[in-house]
Image 1 (cartoon, rainbow, N blue to C red):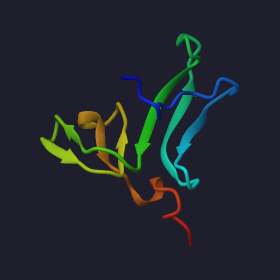
Image 2: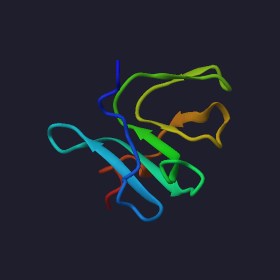
Image 3: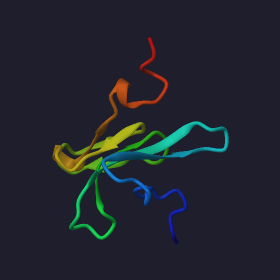
Image 4: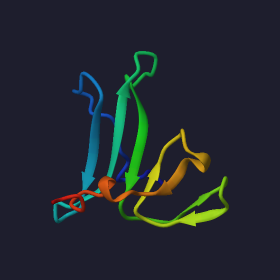
Length: 94
């Protein structure tokens, strides 16, 4: 079954950028940051994805389940961790 809320790089972007998905009420529920890569058919590599809602994921390196909000990054052990406050839209306001 295809995933409806699948994030993709913006095809009109000319450089590094972030794409996001909003819910019906306009609240961001998922976002990903991409860097330019001329060798990737899409032109970009995903370097970070933040899921603000959804299922828990299992971190194989730590043996822990990580709830939402969580971050997917290839450069961290197990490739998943809890999101920091500054990675959650609306929570880093002064």
